[in-house]
Image (cartoon, rainbow, N blue to C red; front, side, top):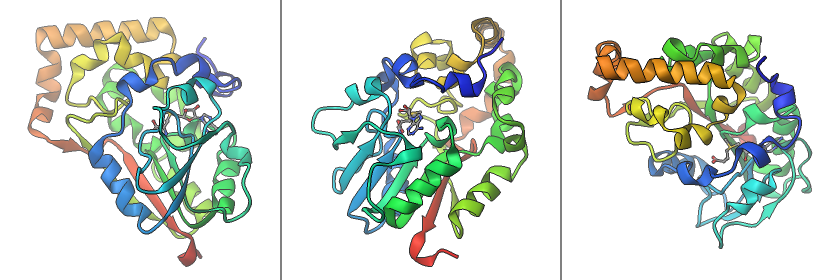
Length: 265
Ligand SMILES: C[S@@+](CC[C@H](N)C(=O)[O-])C[C@H]1O[C@@H](n2cnc3c(N)ncnc32)[C@H](O)[C@@H]1O
């Protein structure tokens, strides 16, 4: 049996699965530039689900919120101060920050709506969410051809195209949805990052910093990885996906959601 998502996250999962996270999960400068541009004139920023500190701007006054001690321990020395807390109960007064960000984290929260409401409460001007639209998960070759079980990890309603965006709109009000294409040499090793470097998925160290691989059964993962290894060896992967070598960046469903609270309706 796979671990149900609620059980998977019931403890502080990243204390267990986050070891070595910072080895392969580093801010990609091109994605960071998009976040920076969207933050605009924000001086103070709350980074929720901050992990090891990726995408935190050195030029702003950043406060990090992170529930996992293991992740906090991986923050480089000199990085923004981190408060050990969860999105669902942010220990700050209303309107404490110019902006609040949540970077590839909200799918891990036990109550996403509560976390977003908290971000809206503590931010004065802007809320930013960066994550992959789960309704587009099947468009990625790794999921479609090798790990279809990944789709079962996504709660059913989120598998429908558009649901994720509509839910966010319902909570955040007016928002801008900006596709974030992933560069072929992306420095941040998230699940879709290696879309043009399929051999990377054969590496246990790469997989260990990606939560999906911890949620699926070990047998399911090893079967998928063996199949990928064979397909790379006999040219089948190349035949199906070789055209990707011509692309420098790809839309794998990553979206930057920007809600300007001053213009919220
Ligand atoms: C994939 S990591 C992303 C970390 C960082 N934002 C980055 O871009 O590298 C997801 C993070 O969300 C954190 N997280 C999980 N549940 C959370 C919650 N309820 N509130 C805030 N953060 C949470 C995890 O501990 C983990 O550090």
